[in-house]
Image (cartoon, rainbow, N blue to C red; front, top):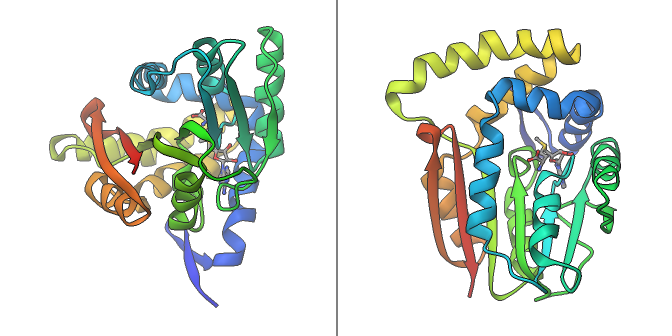
Amino acid sequence: MSSTHFGFQTVDESEKASRVRGVFDSVASKYDVMNDVMSGGLHRAWKAYTLMVANLKEGDKALDIAGGTGDLSLAFSKKVGASGQVVHTDINEAMLRVGRDRLTDKGVILPTLVCDAEKLPFPDNYFDLVSVAFGLRNMTHKDAALKEMNRVLRPGGKLLVLEFSKVAKPLEKVYDWYSFKILPTMGKMIAGDAESYRYLAESIRMHPGQKELKALMQQCGFGHVDYHNMTGGVCALHVGIKC
Ligand SMILES: C[S@@+](CC[C@H](N)C(=O)[O-])C[C@H]1O[C@@H](n2cnc3c(N)ncnc32)[C@H](O)[C@@H]1O
């Protein structure tokens, strides 16, 4: 049996998805408020930049993978208009339900689908844009998921991977202190769950850095890959074009 990592722990591959599900079942109802508090609202700027790079037009078809509470789906839907299509997906029902309710409250109704990024239920060459924001890190087989994202994109289509990444050297100490001391405390106070936010900090350290992720995307079939660091590398946006 193969093993993988769940944060700093080594677990059997078959266990990881259910451990990740436990994290997002636990934090779903407080996910949005925690995002604002722990990033000081910065996640909104990272997503706004992602939307700008997406450069969606009326009539485009976009797939939001690991879409969770729906920030990107909502923003995409405003760009593609009534003639376009945005599909809001996630493996976790609790996260999707919060997202779907939020979007409905804003008068936006999208196809919302529970699905695993490693086995996408969509045809080949279909979407103009695929996004995955803060989701890839949690996937057991990142290569399988990236290959699926490549498959469902049309030739010339764009994959956007927004993810925590490797911070610049001068920020490392303060970032570690914030991640391992402050984040779990905030998680405990606001979401009643320190462990899930400890997992967040650990999973970020285990995720490939900017250059490694770029190489992985190239191995998974993306012809042109580039990345843009944000906030000193706390976060990076990788852009992959399907040949
Ligand atoms: C940190 S949340 C990100 C939510 C949203 N994209 C955002 O940026 O706010 C990560 C999401 O990845 C989802 N996820 C984890 N593994 C997945 C998989 N294999 N396929 C699809 N979604 C997955 C989780 O259920 C969770 O909702």
